Length: 268
Image 1 (cartoon, rainbow, N blue to C red):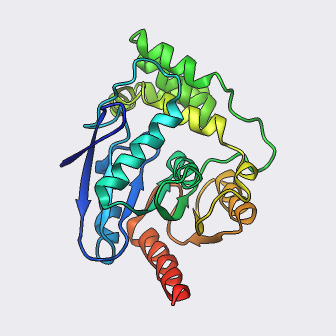
Image 2: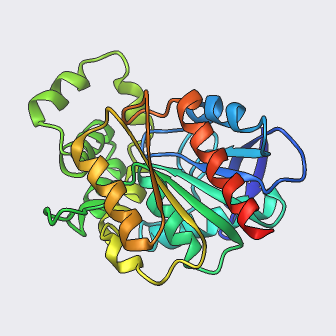
């Protein structure tokens, strides 16, 4: 494990996989991910590209020096800038779920990003009800009160759309402690999705190539969101066989590498 330091002094845990002269790929996890869950994909990609996986702030071995939850999105962009600098000063960003929206946003903020890959970004692409802008504040408030289970449950019901009865079942499951461990950090995911969940707001603002991916077996709303985002952004879209919403390294990595190989071929 290495450490990168963000602008506010937050230390971010980073693992590096592979080596070589190709542009590094930085993996950005979803709401419930730490870098360990990204490790299998990182190893798969490292066969052709140096790859880095990091714990987003407040998750895993990364800290969070923020004293409040104002400016959550800006802090995560600053975190990405620190990780990209650690990677060597430029990178391809591969974001999973809400991490995909963060990756796309970073490309509009003058960070040294060469391309963006989004695996099933949770955009509101079909005119549904957008997330409430105060959701991140409500999640953060519950976490500060020590009600981490309630914070995680609120994210699941309002951000993901899981029925309350199902959430109650999940709260009694053996893996619920993992959800509580990242409960405070879920405010960051709620913020980036609520504030930047309409892909049309990115039209004409992303200066790098974009690829969206969706698993063949995923939820229809996520498949639509990925396809619509590619259309709006003028990017590429591919369906990943053998995958649902979960990252399947052996299925996702070839699609990513083929996209990047195509960009290199076009540059010659």
